[in-house]
Image (cartoon, rainbow, N blue to C red; front, side, top):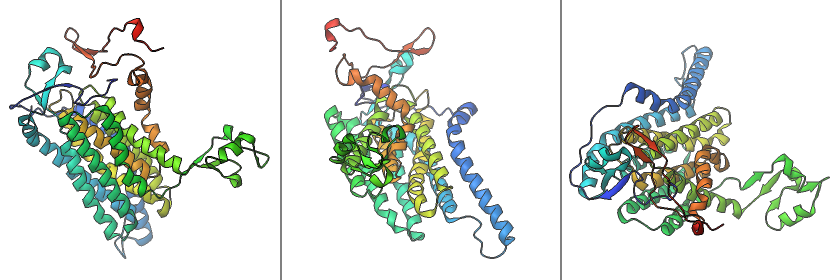
Length: 412
């Protein structure tokens, strides 16, 4: 979908007062496929717990104070438990909340299933409000972990994160109901990032690639280009030009990152389960990164990644609960509510987890889709809204959507 959407990409807006949700359980293959991205982070956590427990037995012989696991592992296990409960609650509540949205007219037909989808009963939309609300509750419960361990320094970060996510959850739901114009959807995420940026305590420096350092410093002295750069940002001469302190420009970058994340999930959609599925995979990749850093860093350096893992475990739990109902054939649509909620959750962990640059590596498919969509997004070629893949009734598969352009409609 190159033009984005103000409604769920796979539906046509329509009023409905009757919605039937299939109770057919997922197949064994679907469960295996859905759980595969989660296996690497869980395997990393299990390996660390086994290693710590074996070390405890060898050093204490099972006697003495009963602390077989380190404090980080215990916190992570508590986050996994909360995530499991949150996932179960989401999976249970989604079909119960769906009729209320349908009666309010927030429903549509699935045009991604061809004529059968058009003739079927309307499907409720904006179900991202359910996992979003449960995520907020589970994240608030995780705050007790910081209180019980005496680590209150991260409470400010957590509260600012929840404020930003709650803001975007509200924006997404009102977008599904009121159909906001695009100019508002680009502006308001920037406002939502202000709590994050105000509480940001990390570095604003970047490492300059080795190939480019010679253009900043040569022989221990700044080059002409390096002197020009120092008028805008700070070049670390002690590091021989290897580090640039971007200052306020780094904060601007992180604000733009939040805008990109929220809209990247929203624009890369149009097929049952795509919004939720891509978010689930990105979240599991972030968890792998967090756990690798946690188990190889000291306690001070591990704090941001522990915060990120707390957010992502709860996010994965509610996302899996929603994916069960949004998997093809979708029984609910997630709407912009979920897209904005998911995007801001990723921006939160990237900013407060101090890996905002690494986060873009996990968004490479979305970055590629954005670059491919630039000509249409900036009106260089016509951009029909809500353009979807076409369901081919003969082969029962989706075909790429196409449209014709007149020669005078191209801007180049």
